Image (cartoon, rainbow, N blue to C red):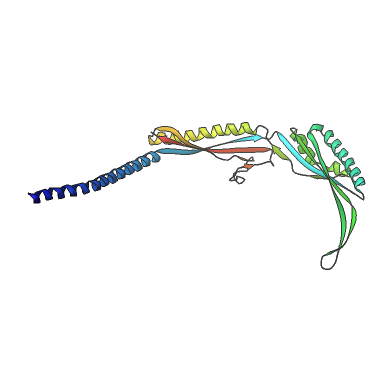
Amino acid sequence: MQSTENNVRQAAGNGGSAMPSVIISVSVIISCLILVSGFLLYKSTAGHSISATGSASVDFDSDLIVWRGSFSAHDDTAKQAYASIKQDATIVKKYLQSNGLSESEIVFNSVDITQRHNDTYDNNGNVISSVPDGYDLTQGIVITSSNIDAVEKISRDISSLLDSGVEFVSNPPEYYCTTLDSVKLDLIDKATQNARSRIDIMAKDTGASIGKLQDSTLGVFQITAKNSGTDDYSYAGWLDTTSRQKTATITVNLRYSLK
């Protein structure tokens, strides 16, 4: 009788120690099932999407021109040099206005002054003497106008200024579009429609149904000279200022879920 009771107690003891192991094993199995089902659900959800990149471009003309130039004068004293460059500024202004530009379109920059020296060097290239040799004065000018034809003509022909004794240096004109923001918005609209049309065609051909928009990415604007191709494209975008006629291009990428 005592032996039987001992066996029962031992069995009960063994059963009690086995229970935690069973619970842990079941928990591990359940956790694995949850992880596996979650992974399969993620794969099925992530894999059911469709994407396409749309593009749009438009040609347009600049409506603003910026032309920069400068003229210089040299004389023995700063006072004489300033009088010379002031006289040159009057000649330049009169020339521009006589060619159809208004005073509001002409801006004269401040005068830069530099003292010139004649240096003497030894055989080792070291300066052994420096003698003042007058003053150099330079003044820049900026013309900003919507009268592109007139400014282009002036920038190509400054011979009359040179004939007047003005040492004028001309920079290439720069061309801008004051309505570029509206051009960009119109391009985004067209590129987005283009991307969606491509997605619709792919979905139709494969028998899929399009769901909600998951992601959209806007590319960089490329403003290049007309008919220049893609050689001027830049990773960070490009803004051409050298050409009057330009082409604007943009891309839009859309990704939709599939039902």
